[in-house]
Length: 256
Image 1 (tube, rainbow, N blue to C red):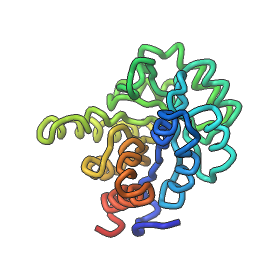
Image 2 (image 1 turned 90 degrees about the vertical axis):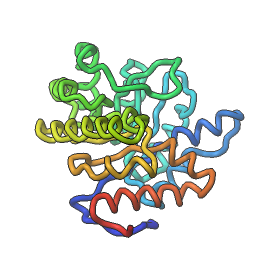
Image 3 (image 1 turned 90 degrees about the horizontal axis):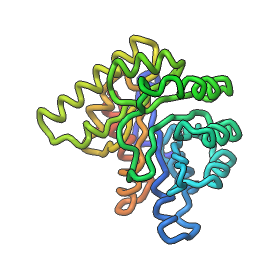
């Protein structure tokens, strides 16, 4: 595996590479390339700790065939992003990914907008989470950085939460962005206090990742759209290498 430096293993922040938008490019022409499974293998070579793929109900990017191949052909843990529907639950149970991240999903949205309404959907989510946990699939809930929502996630029995970083990334530099960062910091600390593993993701770039990566109570970042976009100019391996380097430096290791 190619690497940009070393960092303390105990302090190491994991990187999950989301390959959805390799499939978006493929599907734009209805072709069989570029291949998201090939992208996953490159990600593994260049420092990814896991692969994330969102199988949406409308199959706009990742397809059932992609999930089947990812399950069979990659050695990294697969994190299946999915809506809380019976169809997706059946697919998760059939493929047994390492992890399932439950996300909100609306057909009209361009990408996942905001976190899951855990408090309002407790009754619906409870049996869904239990079924995944009973199948020995690590469950995470994609949520807003709100302590009350984290408390609800804990009650549901989900061992992991992924904090939505979109509001932070979209905020202009200065007070507004700092306020959003403080929400993430406080939420990650609260997750740690109540025994939840904390991940984060959505919209992170080279310019915005460092302050989030510095939060010691966050164990994993999931990043995709930016890495695929940057790959157009420098190649996927190089974009992942640079993101990995920035994350390692933020955690006190690697080369600046």
